[in-house]
Image (cartoon, rainbow, N blue to C red):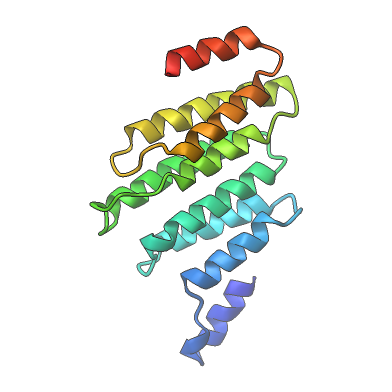
Length: 179
């Protein structure tokens, strides 16, 4: 709504036209909202941003991290599907950008791992979160422009510990397989 009004105002005053920074502020507000539709609104805004010619890929990282966090805070039962979809969109965005030869940050992947770690409410969600955590690690390892860092592994280990708190055998099995 705010961005729509700003777009209307910008017809008479171009200095009011929202840019990526303005959109990222709105995304942050949505990610902290307790509204049931906040994550969907944030995701929709990010899609609009991606479709704009002026989408600044240098700020894409902030945008994607913020929307991943919004989904993590949501009560949507498909939040992990949404997070995986955002990872795919981020990868496409990085690959399509003019700066695709520069190393990328693993922060978007780390945000996805953090969402997995903090969503251990019930066994069904734990199982889904673990699947998304392992998918995230796999995608980051395959990424050409970003590599896992210390934060990646510490967040992954905490997620595995939270998600498999009562299953030491499976925890060890995953760690041995992955490392």
